[in-house]
Length: 159
Image 1: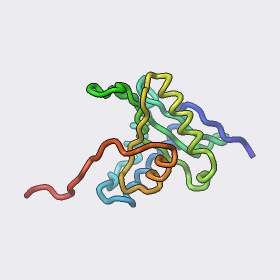
Image 2: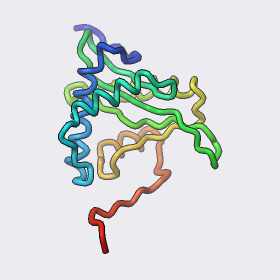
Image 3: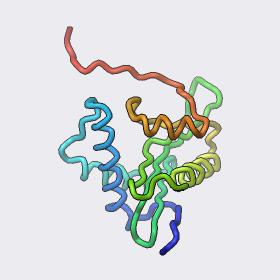
């Protein structure tokens, strides 16, 4: 069996990586109906990743076995403007195919992403995901992350 490699995403990874992003977004929808996926999600995922590869403030890494993409991590470097530490690396997407979970891949991808973000100037690492995603909550809490910001939503508009 080929070994798993964690590396920067390349152009030839985009289509398969976009499928992982779509799977993750659909999973988010299962956790919370306020994350209802748009009809052209595949096209948007491909554009999102293409723009990520071209950005100097974005980390996009994949875990692959041969040509097969098993996991994806995307993160962005952001200036917090008013708070110290000033620069934060925010993990916006982390998804691993179900058959590749419960091994060390999630932790390995997270550590790889954190190292890249620190080299880019990140002084703090955050992770962003739907509050109802208990899988992500447990994953990040187990690795020392804690809640930092609350975003509250109300579905209906009007009164």
